[in-house]
Image (cartoon, rainbow, N blue to C red; front, side):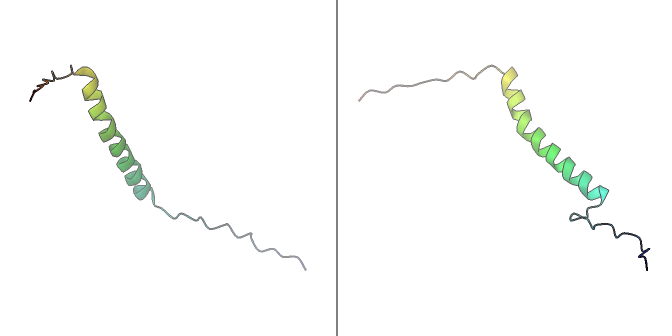
Length: 57
């Protein structure tokens, strides 16, 4: 007697919907952009003059 039942597909460990995955990717992209923007802003700007006041006692 042969077994003619279809093979069961494995269930995925992560059950995320596309909207959830796109939200996660968007948040990661926003975090990376927030980290990169201040560095890009500092590259073009000239350094602020630093006034050093040395006091003697």
